[in-house]
Amino acid sequence: MTELTEKQKMLQGLEYFPSDKTLQQERATAKRLCQQFNRHDIDDRKGSRKILASLVGAYAGAWIEPDFYCDYGYNIYLGKNFYANHGVVILDTAPVRIGDDVMLAPHVLISTASHPLDPIKRRKGIETALPITIGNNVWIGMGAKILDAVTIGDNAVIAAGAVVNKDVAANTVVAGVPARVIKSL
Image (cartoon, rainbow, N blue to C red; front, top):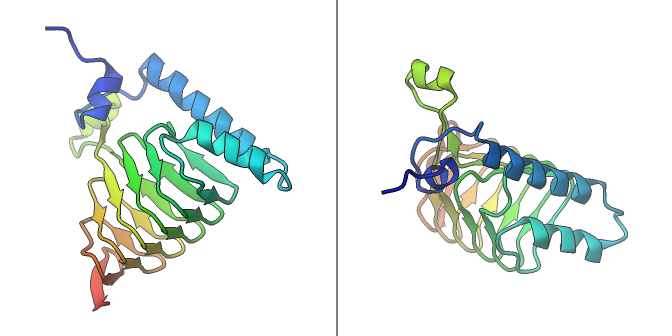
């Protein structure tokens, strides 16, 4: 049996070393594409969309306002009518699947990456990554943070500044740190 590559470990949710040369090169490619997108002529939306389509894993005519940053891009799957306002960051070391008609306010952070609690492993540079799934018709407020291994159900609303560290049921509003249900829709 052959040993898994660091990328395979990352994609399977196992401990991996992000300092791996292949992963470093892939992050650099994504950063270059983000840089091109962020600097692209604002009057050339077609060109901007082309850059986005080459960056993300699935793209159904979504729009992201610059500045936008991600780790790899190929782990981001955007549904129809997706909209992200300025300053959104998606750390996609694991898949991030976003449904149709989702809106992100400015400065939302979505992060599939995490680090071990064990300080020895952290010093060694080990990371883990678990996927995030966001359903259809979700609105995520300004400055909210969505952490690894979270699923957000359809029609949910995430209040501004919330830190979501566990699943959010469909048709609910969550707020706070950590986020808690404050209302059913």
